[in-house]
Amino acid sequence: MPGIPMRILIVGGGIMGLSCAWRLAQSRCQVTLLEQRDCGGGATHASLGALWPPSPLADGPLQKLHRQSLSQMESFLTELAADSALPIPLRRGGRLEFLLDPDALTRATQEAPLGHPGITFTPALPGPILEILSPDQIRTLEPLVDPTHLHALHCRFTAQVDVAALIAALTAACLRRGVTILEQTPVDRLTLADLSFTVHTAGASGPRDLTADRLLITAGAWTAQLDPLLQRFAPTRPAKGQALMLATPQPLISHIVKRGTTYLVPWQDHILVGSTTEPEAGFDESTVPAAIETLRQDAIAILPALASAPVVRSWAGLRPDAPKHRPIMGPIPGHPQVFVCAGHYKTGIGMSPLVSRLIADFLTTGIVPPQLADFLPRDRPPRSLHSARR
Image (cartoon, rainbow, N blue to C red; front, side):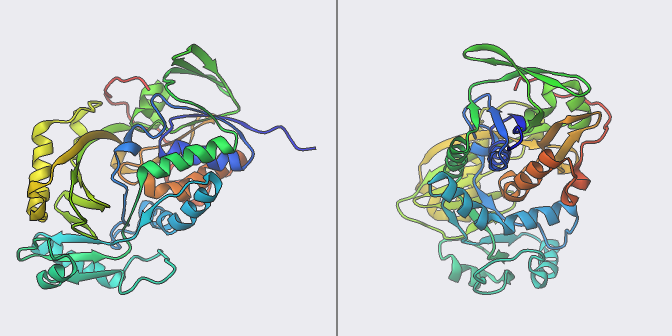
């Protein structure tokens, strides 16, 4: 006779909350997910869907985890598409990153021979994973891009995913697996006891108090706002990013093109332009016309053909940041029934294939996956955080 399924309550329906819910439901857990907006409506919705690995010169636990997860992206999306019966477009078009000064060129010269250790890709990429291109080679690859006198680092592994399709597929797969999804249901507060918890919600149908066997908090930048213990052990904060979409009569570039902090992401007959990084903005999700215009002018400097391209829309999102840009993943000390998975900053989508599986295994077995040992919640000095309700 099968055992009683573990009941798991998840707070936060972005990429991490949904992917963890899906994996937990596959493990026959009884999952309820709470989201204050619509699923994926926060930082995930604001993402441009660009997926590129960290520098091969950086080889710490975070970079290894990121590379391993990116290696699993194709298989993750294939499995998810089958489980949801929905397509999830992924395009591996590569990336051109301009080298703006001699130091950047020197660093790229060191990076190129290394490729991306730990990343596997089948079928094999047509050429080296990393290489340095001259201005003439850049013009051959992307005739409409203006390299001026600059070289660029060409990464063939870089890809982009359709974020809206990804969220739709995760939501559908969760529902097909029996996950209860409560959207438009903000969490007011938590009550944490030694071995139990209560989640106090304020949805449209009125306040509710919910409990379960385990609590997983994937509330992104709002995680630390839920309880003083989370401010102590999982001090997340927002890093605002503004972006825009330009309409083009036909595709203008085939690669993601990055110059400085601005990058262009081609998608059908649009160009996505990102992005600002504004940790000082707090929980403000409004767009600023001056910032949007600066992004537009930066895009034109990279791709002059965009000068007449109309702005279709602009938006802002709050990336979930944490100390040293390192995610926090695991149980809260003293409260083994309360888990956190937050603070993935700019890598949430890329991290989701592997992290969702590791968190699901951790929750259901209680065994710490070796890949998460460096990211467990730990005591940190208290600091001031902007007030906001999740």
